[in-house]
Every structure is written in C-alpha cells, then in structure tokens.
Image 1: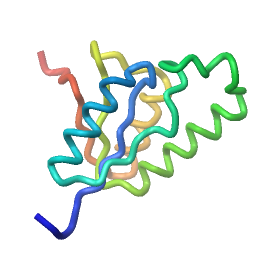
Image 2: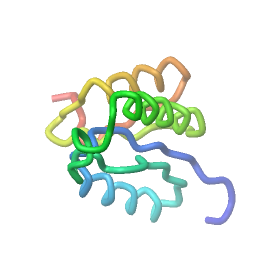
Image 3: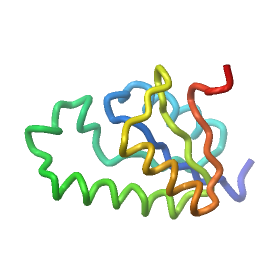
Image 4: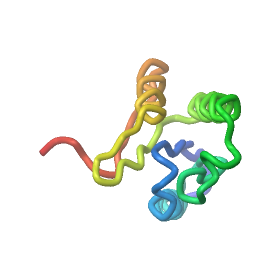
Length: 108
C-alpha cells in the first residue's frame, strides 16, 4: 500500500463539519492524501463575527489553489446542499480536469 497516493481536496459548506471530519478519516484510511478546509467558519460561528468580505475572498481563492494540488475533489453535499462557493469550486475543478465525487449522489 506504500507508494503513490491520490490527492483529494474536500469541498462543501463548512456547516457540515462532522461530515468533513468523517469523510477525511475514511478517505485517509483508504490510502489517500486529503486536503480539507482551513476552518469551519459556519459550523464554528466564525463567519459574520470575524470573517470580513476580503478574508472570505482570500479563503475561496486558497481553496481553489488546494484544488490545483489535487487529483480530484470530493464534495460534502449533505442533503444534496451545494452553496455558491462550493458550486464555484466544482465548476473550477471540472474546468481544470479534476474528477468530482459527491457524498450524496444526484442520480435518483
């Protein structure tokens, strides 16, 4: 199992902190390098208190750089929810040729 590892960047609303942590654990135990969000602004109540518009723009850009480093992305879309930032990340991943996987499929 030692060797080349797939790099996966997690995307999704930071209000789904528990799901991020669970998927991160599962993908890591499957032998992947997992890149996640830097903070859970919505889940931890940091957005609206400490995160300015400029910081939000910076965090969105940083996450796109994380997508650049990945082989694919994994979207945490609990209840099939995808917000504007996540939609932008998915579009960016597709545009840059990354595979996109979802926690909850859209095929039914």
